[in-house]
Image (tube, rainbow, N blue to C red):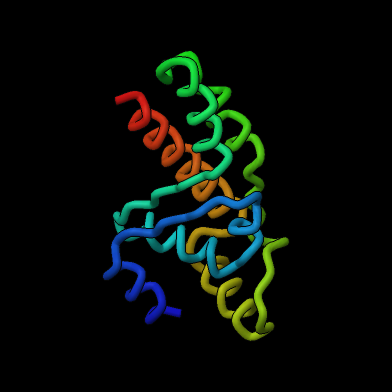
Length: 131
């Protein structure tokens, strides 16, 4: 597990492409996001839903700060981080990830942190669209 954490630390950036809530239903993906944040890396989230909302607005005008809830609010509300319910292909991987998380941050705190990072990343992306 430590080797995986070190590789993620070395990379320093995790790009999450949101397609529904699938990313947050995979244990390794949650571990990847946690490792990125733990080691001071950057987590960037891209959402097709949010991008489509921006394109819809731009057909008639520029995106404004008041559009934030329309563009990313629904995406944020749809994020459901629950490590306990997340899946792995291999039961041994699940056991290793669970042990690592329980001994470090705990399930509830990981869920909270990953959700917070996801929302902050969406906020950053939205501010970028205002340029």
